Image (tube, rainbow, N blue to C red):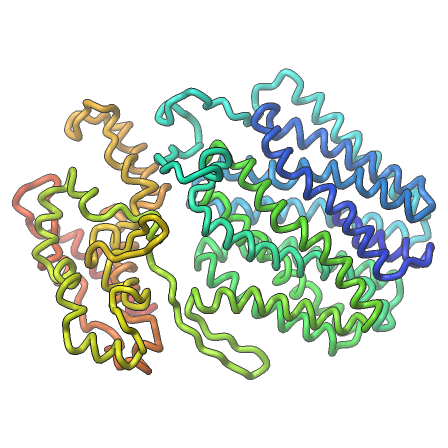
Length: 602
């Protein structure tokens, strides 16, 4: 579909199309792709992703072949629909293959590499088309050659896959989860919460819906940016060759950005990476208005990087909310929900605005959409928005733990009874009753306008363990097991399975233990061996990252705590292998100290 970005300006010039018609041609192909994404995801469970992807290549090639032989707006639209049908069997299926065969900790980087490789293919085809047309080769002949390459490659892939068992069809039907083998993670038991969970494998429908909204605006801006970039360059006085090349340059930036942003998301987290990228996108779009065509050309790699790089961050998050055997459906759902309006209606509406009010107004609208995305995240990530010298500070109101995934200390106490007994004597546990009654807490709450301390996430996120029950989030304990080791719904059953119903911990097979450890961590557990991550959780609250609590509420700016001494004090619960609850070994205390020093410098 990337070929549209260099093809549409040529069709507009040759056949006198206006911006609205250009947007319509972009939209019809996108509509066909969006409508068929979900059927493709479901069909993949029966026929396999790889075969359907090869079929899609053939069908997309046939569509572009038809465009090359057409000479009217109606036929252009028809064959772009055919190409869109072929494209429907690409995105969600390939994304599902990636996440099914990648460890959870490496998904963002793997998605970045995959997206970057996809852009390399787009770049190759758009660059060949642009260079050929720039060299004087007829656009239709060039398009026909590229279409034939796509058809031949698709047919060759189908031939190679014939009789192959390598396809990733859902072969787990009727099997126990623990019987699966390979790189696929063991799925934790997920409560039956309705149709989306039962049929589509959506583990957290509300967060999945929020992600869909974010991807919606992200797809809208990307689609409009690439559709009208060549027209913007022409409007600034650039030649058709320069306009076509600008799209290629932006795609180069996107190709690099999708990999770099995948690495950044794995290192710094999805929200912060996304926030920074959206801030830079707004700045880049504004510069597109002010700069000349030649100057803008030099900045396009960076603008392309930030505008397109966000897709790696958002799509990398999809797998977190979908069960392994329903990844194709989950990705098809998010692709459809996000693109059927944004990438379809977006180019048409923006094209209409451009016809009526000019391309500059359209760019301002795109910048506004990015602000909508960012404003929706500011409240959740507690960051500082700096745009053109105007800084707006907002604080985090999201929970450190997802209440829908919290099991509570009683669930842990079924096996770790002695550890929970030790915890109940600590300040971490007694804060549940003591803190809301203290004068200091009440004074801070009054300054912050908080009426009920246990009802405000600014307090819940660090002082309590909150759980969701029947749509309502309520505190169930103080700082408890999951505050340090992560919300347990996705890993607690894996963590407590020693190899079968009647197998005890002391009888567990060593190989099964290693796999259990790895699968628990992949599902989100922070194991005791991961000292740095545990220490990072301590710092997450004891440094009081909410600036408004300090500046407005008068909360202390941070605890004067010494990590080694405290972990070996009242919060110590080294009871699983010994009833004595002895202090950690010297080597382990040194690891706590090193983690403390590193985090203090961070």
